[in-house]
Length: 166
Image 1 (cartoon, rainbow, N blue to C red):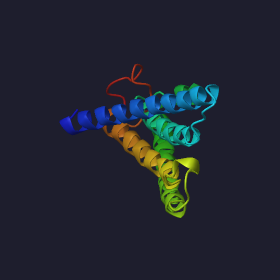
Image 2 (cartoon, rainbow, N blue to C red):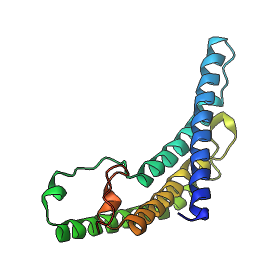
Image 3 (cartoon, rainbow, N blue to C red):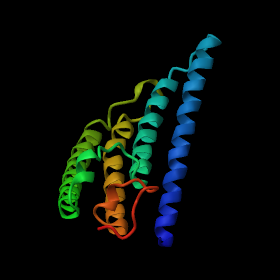
C-alpha cells in the first residue's frame, strides 16, 4: 500500500474517532446540563451533526474492510465466471447509486446551507454535507478494494478474502 493511502486511512480513522468522541461529549453535556437544571440548548444539534459524520466515516471504514452485511448463499454456489459477472454488476450498481447520492446530496447541502442548525448557529448544510461526502468515500473504498483484491474478493471480508481470486 502506498504512503498516500496509509495517510489517507489514518486521517479517516482519526476523523471517525473524533466525531464519535464529539458525539459522546455532546450527548453527555446535554444530559448533565439537564440534570443540573442548566440545559445546553445547542448540544442536541451538535450531537446530530457529529453522529451523522460518525455514521458516514463508520460506513466507509466498514466497507474498506469488506465487513458490510452480505448474503452469500447464492453467489457461493455459482461458478466463478457467474460470480464474477454478478460481482461486477453489483459494483456497477453501487457506484451508480453512490454517484446519484453524491450528486443529490450536494444539491441538498447547497439548498440547506442558509438554514441554521437550531441553537448552535451552525449551518444545517454541514449535516447534509455528510451524505455526499460519505458516498464519495464509499465509492473510493469500493474501487480501492476492487483494484487491490479483484472483483470477487473485493466483496469478501478482509479476514476471509482469498488472494488471487478474480
